[in-house]
Length: 496
Image (cartoon, rainbow, N blue to C red; front, side):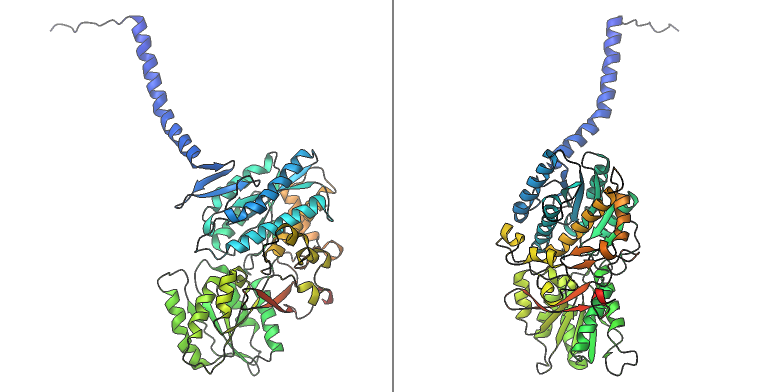
C-alpha cells in the first residue's frame, strides 16, 4: 500500500489559518454578548432606566431626568433642579429613593393622582431638609424609583438601588415602598439584606413588621380597624357585617377584615355584634368572577340587614360594590359602608360615582389637611401648614387637589428618613443605611418626628405608636371630606 503524500503548507498560510480560527472562535463567543449589548441599548430609556415587561414599561431609577409619565413631568423637573443644586453646592449629601409603581395600569390599586401627590410630598420634604425650616447636613438627593405596574419589575429596580449604595449617590434610605402586596414585601426583604434603611409611606398591612431596617409612618390596618370601631361606638352602632377580599396577594384586605372582626363586637355580643361570624367573600384575583360575586351579595344583605358593612377590599373594587348594593331590592333598608385607607386611591371621578350610589361611605384615611384643626395635640401644626390652601404645595402645584393625604404621608416618610440621617451624621463621619435604621428607634419623646399626619415614633417592630386616624367621607364633588379624628387607643398620643 502506498503511503499518503505529505502536504506541507507554507508558514504564512498556516499563520493565516490559525488567526482565522481564533477570530471565528472569538466571534462565536462575542456575538451573543454583542447581541445582548445591542438589546440592552435598544431597551434603554435613560440613564438607570430600561424597558421591561410585557408592555415595555420604563422602570428603574432616575434623579428626575426621566419622567416616568406625562403627569409626573412637572414635579420631576423640580426634583431634578434641586438634585442638580445639591451636587453643585459641593456640600456633603446622601441619597433617599422614593420607590413605588409610577407606570400604572387599570390593574393597579394606586391611581395616577395618588402617586403624583406622593412625589409632590416627597419633594416638599426634600426642600424643607435642604433649604427650609428643617435644614440640616448632609443634604439629600431625592431619587425616583419605578417598580412598574403592580411592582412586577421590583427586582430590577431594587438591584439598581443596591448598586448605588457605594457610588457617588451614596444611597442610604428608600421610602414609599408602594401598596401592601407580596411583591413589595419581597422588595423590602431584599433591601433589608443589603443594609438600606426603609420607611413605608402608605403601606398599612398589619403583618408587615419585624423586618430589619424597616419602619412605616402609616397606621396599621389593626389601628385603622380599631379607630373605625371607636368611631362606630360614638354612633351607637349595633350590627355590622364584613365583606372580605380573599385574593392571596392582597395583604391589605386580609389584615383589614381580620382586625375589624376582632375590634367591633362587644365581648358579650349584647350591644355590638357581627350579624355573621363568617364574612361575605369575593376574590379579586379571579377577573371573571369577582364582579358577579359582589352583585350576588346584595340579596344576602337584604336578608341580614346590618347597619354597617365593613368593606375589606381595595378602593377599585369598592366602587363596583357600591353600584351593586345601590340597586338592591330592599330600598327601604339603609346601609352605611365603612372601609379602609385604600379608598384614598380613588380618582375624583370614582369618588363622585361612589357618592352618587346613594350609599353613605365612611373610611379611615391615613391623613387629611384638616386634621391639624381638629386634633392639634396630635399633629405638627408647623408641618401641616405646608398643606393648607396658602401653603407651599399649593403655590408650586396650584392645579392639584390633595385631600387624599398621599402627599402628607410621602412627606412624613421622607422627613423621617432625613431626620434619621441627621441623627446618624451627628456622631459619625460617613452615614450608612444601618446607622440610619437604628436611629428610627431613638425617635421618642423630644426626638419624635413632627409629621403633618401626626407625631411619629415607632414600636420595636417598626409600626408607628398610636397615630391619629382621620374618619373621612366621600362627597358628590369628588373630594374626601373630613369628619373627625379617631385613635386606635381611643385617645390622643400625648394622653398615653
